[in-house]
Length: 336
Image 1 (tube, rainbow, N blue to C red):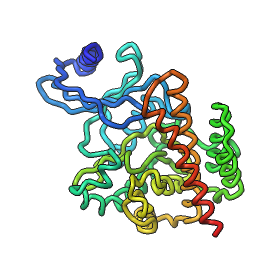
Image 2 (image 1 turned 30 degrees about the horizontal axis):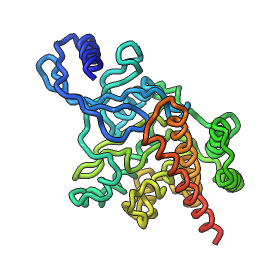
Image 3 (image 1 turned 180 degrees about the horizontal axis):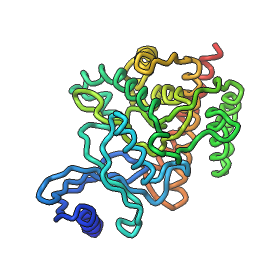
């Protein structure tokens, strides 16, 4: 760790033209997709608290944004009034720390899902979160990305809707891993036959849920992990946080283990001014389980391939079975 801190100290000194001392560096919990550290640095005699976000040897899937792209996207979101950390420095020179990284301001708050859902001192925050998340999603979906020259965002494939693009990419991920799974084959076929209407395409964060928001006693302090930002169907973003896997043990409350789904959707409609198609949201919740279950298998492959051995990645492969059961359960419920 010491060589990394020395290299980071030199980098910050070059960027700021001031004397730099890093007084503390602690890894942050979570972050299966990126290496994340909290830093305390004295720059020119002034103390700063930062978070460093660095690439790992492998990544979740190829469509994820680069650190430079995520940096630019977060800067645009911050300027647009979304609750997101202010980004400060970005480095694509892999000789500095061994991989690309960026540095942003530290924002206080808890991101660990089970703590957000269960800790008694966050009870008041939990009551506020459905409305707060709805408001941030409304702002995210209205992000004027074109005004910021963000032309790198993944978008639906030519001639395809966002739903068709997601189905196709899911098949491709299974094929790339050489996996023939009857549950995924059947549920993807169901998804093809029940696609929602073509939407008005907007910017979509791609991973807003409990676990990717910072929460303190007052509620939401920031939306984090912007690497899956893309252009797509905003209903994707409404179904995704309703998935059982993001309720962290509080399964009876459909939206994020916090509230019933309708409370959340009505709050989003009030904030966005857009009428939400409930059937479309349900489809995206089912598709979210399918997609996340396949990605869990992909995460396990990162470990099994020997490229990046991790007990966490290996355990995610087992959890794919939970998403298979949930997707089937949701489809069965629709047929009743």
